[in-house]
Image (cartoon, rainbow, N blue to C red; front, top):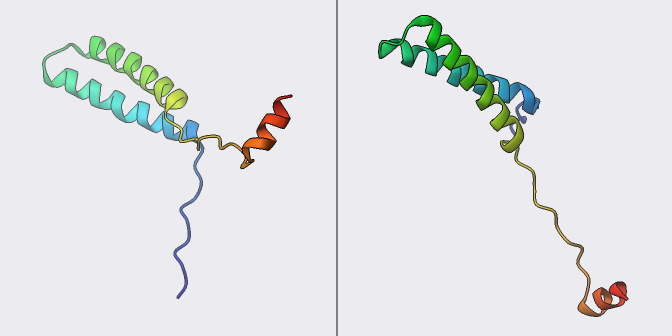
Length: 81
């Protein structure tokens, strides 16, 4: 049975940008819905989108934890000398 191909690799910066734009639009239209003026809503949305972009860019990437080499306790003590 053939296996399903993996999805294409997308750079993490592009993903961060899409999160920022999407949630910035959510802030903008949400602000308009509760009666905030258009200019104020745009400024809040732009600042929010930039902050979201930075947070996702810095903290959002999944990096596997570093693993230590499998060595016996006697080899570790010999390496520390």
